[in-house]
Length: 524
Image (cartoon, rainbow, N blue to C red; front, top):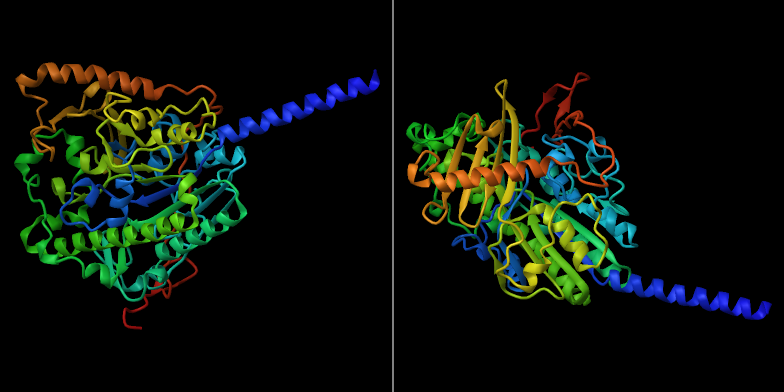
């Protein structure tokens, strides 16, 4: 009797073990290669831009699904990246400024990389995924990286940082938040992103040999300022053929916008001069640098994707490519981000890999927070209950399907002792922007069928009243929903900004008080 009982016991263990393995195999089918750029807008060949050279990103789009109507949830690096990595809106993450640790506001959250790590994946970060100072903390993990997300991390540091003193800038020794650029000497592999690509290649080689499942997140530092790339990428573009959009810079145009909207496109005082004809050549030089840096980033992505294919890992790896937010290049008289216009909210988003159709373009409004549940859906990993994004897998199966009616973006800032807050929804055709609680500070309405540049505010046009009223009701619903605390999130605290990192340019000398007393000259 004892022997029979023992046999039944061990047979039960055997079948449980087999069943567990079956569940594990079914739930963890694919690796993930997540490629994130910094400040990249949709000026890419695959998105229809006639000038920008981006063959590797374009090829990735041809081998997968391109989302043409994808938007971030907050047009600023830190809040946007936190939303993406947690699958929640900024009202829920409590992140609206830079230099905030994700665990300070939502200490119990399960991040995207952490979820894969929980399921036995090796979760690796190379470069910038969560926010930290760019270029100030290149080479470090920064203050906002999350150690719970990663198995291990790699922090490249390249020639662009070592030769920072050579960079042209609108303000001396200001780079991260100031327009700055350099056609650099040397090879791709010497630049920080070139080193990052090399590190990614080495990781793929290792995974191809050890057979471990991986979530490999590669964060490019470019084309974020400073726009630095080897000279050969600048040579691909003709500076004089750069077109600077001067519509939307007049006082007459500004007066059609609510006051907060005006503030959002005029807060960078150092770059306002680029709106005037006498600085047209400088504006062209800066735009050329942005495009050259975009093409440099594309080349590094190409190196990584070629290695993925060479190792054979492409057969069981999902590839995701995106950016944290868009970028103005003179549109509305503004450069950089932090607006609720299309230029700032819209981002490139491409999925490719096994089970994903080739050469498909979707116009469904989607959000960066949809990346989290899409990846867990594709890999059959249970999605945490706090994730409020929507899986895009149904779109892979039927590309004309819409997962939601609109994409929601929020912007909040303090400028010149005034607080501004606004929300935007982008549908297939329209954009509505609401400023202040219940729109007390004004509305903007744009019809993309007739005005893709969003220069004609229709909010006060009587013929658009029914559309405006309908979208007002919809945006109110979206905002209310985004404010709800998600189930299973755990603790939630208001944000407290950490000490901002100070950028030290190699070669400069500072005294004990931190004041710069020696500036390394360009020709040293």
